[in-house]
Image (cartoon, rainbow, N blue to C red):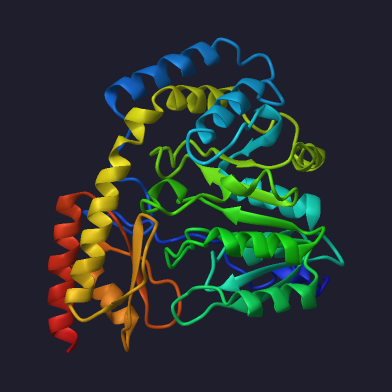
Length: 366
C-alpha cells in the first residue's frame, strides 16, 4: 500500500482550511458586511422577469464578453468618479474575489510577487498562493494609514508585479488618499496596482474614488462589487475598471462563458434600479457614524471608517467578547490585529441589539 498522502494535494495547500466567516443562524448577523436592506419589490420584480427571459435562452451559451453589462457598468461608474469609461475599460466576474484571482493569474505567477500592506483583506494571500505568486506584506501605521515613503521603499525593493490594496481598507475601513494611489502607481513601474473599492460607495463625503486617477496611470486597476451597496451578495458580481489592455489580458485567463446568462440578467436589472438600491447607502453611512461615535463613548478605540463596518478594540480577550455577543444572539467578526473586533452596520434595530449586548459583555468582563 502506498504511503503517499491521499488525496495528492499540492504541498503548499497541505493543512490549509477553506476561507469563510462563520455562517450561524442567530437573530443579528453583523459579521460579513452585507447590506441589511434587500432589493426593493420593484427591483426584485425586474430581476425576476429578466431571469425568466434569460431562462428561455439557457440552451445557448451566454455572451462570452457580456458587452451589454460592461456598458451598463461603465455608465454607472461614470456617475461615481469615473471619467469617460467605455465597455472596453470594464471587466467582470463572479464576485470581486474571482476578479482578483484572474488578475493574479494574468499578472502574477511563478517568479513574480504580489504585495499588500497589513492589516489588509485576508483573501489576498490566498489569491497569491492559488496563482503560485510570491506573497510579501508590508505594514501600515498604528492608525492604519500608509507611510508613503515606507511604502514606496518597500515597493522599490520588492518590485512586485501586482500591488493589492483595499480602499476603504478591509478590515479597518481606512480610505487611501489619491496622492497615495498615485505614489503606488509610480513606484510600481510596470506592475499593476489594484485598488479594491468593494466598499467604495460607502465612503464619506469628500473622500474621492481612485477611479478619478485612471486617465493618469495606465497600470491602475479599480475594482468594485455589487455585493455591498447594491445588496446583491447572493448574485456574485464583481467588476473592475482599467485600461483596455489590462481587460484584454484578463480575457486570456478567464474560463469560457464564466458569467452565466442569469448572472448577466440579474446585474443588468439591478443597475436599472441603481438610484433606488443605493438609496439605503446614505442611511447606512449615518448609522455607521453613529456607531463609531457610540463605541468611542464607551471608551473604545475605533478606526475611522469609510466602509459599512467599524473596527473597534482593543480587548485583552477578544474571543471572549465575540463569544459573549454570540451568546446574546449577535454575530460579529473576530478579525484584524490582535485585540480588535469588526461589526458590520445593520438596521437601527440590529445596531440597538449589538450595543445592548456589547454593554452587557463589557460589564461582565471588567
